[in-house]
Image (tube, rainbow, N blue to C red; front, side, top):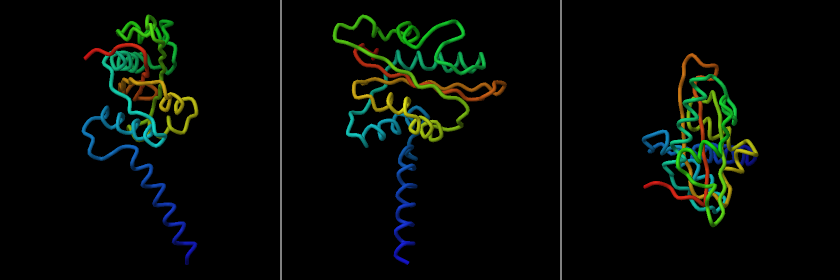
Length: 166
């Protein structure tokens, strides 16, 4: 009987932990994603990330591009890479005098923030971006194309060392 109680408590703990990834009171998918991401960072005692307009613009444009062109890759069909897309959106990370870096997480097919965040959390490379101690800024993109292979496309852009527009 003691063993059954311990197992039940462990199962509830896991369920509650995953439930905390996306708080129910968030009103938009972007707010849910930010809260989920910052919850993951808080578990490692990291500072929360702040939404950055240029990173969001780059992420949203690229999510839309992947959905419209029906592909999933860090390299655009036009040959663009994440650094070029983020720089073009106005996050001037290449000319930082104090050091800078950027990162990108992409995914497709997940139908909710909880699902995509769980996938990224369980992927070593995506998790490293989400818990990078240097990153201070983040932007999110999501786009839907019912005619595409994956239907829904997600992008997270990360950065530090450049300025965000107000």
